[in-house]
Amino acid sequence: MWSTVERLVGRGRRACDGVSADDLCTFFAEQVDRIRTTTSGSSPATFRPASTGATFTEFAPLTPADVAAGIARLSDKSSAADPLPVSTL
Image 1: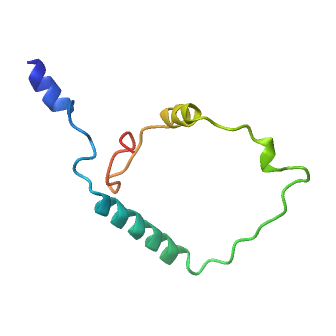
Image 2: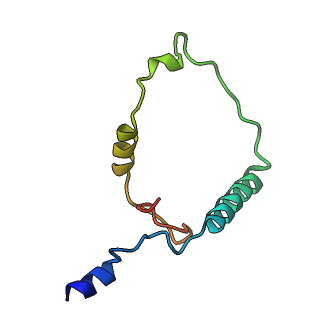
């Protein structure tokens, strides 16, 4: 029974085995092209100066553990258009 459960939940297999690097490259290239096409008629971006005294030195450095903890707190949502689940990414 346990071997059946293990097989059903996919334990022992990497979730990304079905997606190649070429698939990911194609997916992201198509996304960028789609966004460029969709926004090609938009007006140029406008920028305003940052408030006085704001510099990047005011941010505390992050550790890899900080980044991993932040990612772990994100919702685990994805769509059918995503080539691999958010949990795998």
